[in-house]
Image (cartoon, rainbow, N blue to C red; front, top):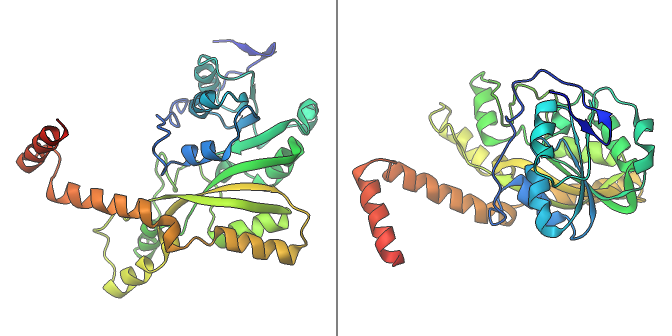
Length: 296
């Protein structure tokens, strides 16, 4: 299949991952990276969606009447995103090998640049961040998500010599970079980027059967950052000196219990419900009927 964006041929890339990152989005689901990023964007603004995949985020932005552009590597994903009609243009780009001069027409052009689930896939994410800042207006913001390799499941897994790659998630088999809040602070500070806001996608233990001493599990549970699955950052170019900038970035990203407790409580509650009322069980069917009756 051959198709074009802005009269520029799109190279066909053989891939079976065109729809791997296709997701359904609900603006009311606040424990979602894309919804958090959506809340960071401004109505009627000009937005670049880097790694736009199948265009789910661009579709979400339509309710804010944003002027949306996209960048994507996979030709199959571009075809799907283009069919939505939400993007002005989608540029096929390999962020591991590109010429930034081709995009000089977009220097200082965007109010927001959104790069969700992107940097961890790149050979040199810092080079890409520097490039993206050139595309921002003076008061523009980068909206970035980064996975937390210090998530509780991974901490327990490493203690049992387990580090198994998967199709998606923190240990996505295409990830080549891994981050903790400290390494994120170090990277942002070195690049002169200031974290204005930080929220997270929260999750709980998914592998409760992993063996570990109770004392170790208790230690992991005492750290709120153990339940941060992904960080979602809104950052801008800063004029602060390195000492001030590092302090600011640490304060913004070092999330506390009150930052994650609401979503974590909901997740724990759902875990308990699934434990005591397994899907398909008699108890589950009875509870579902009662819930339906109460809603009448």
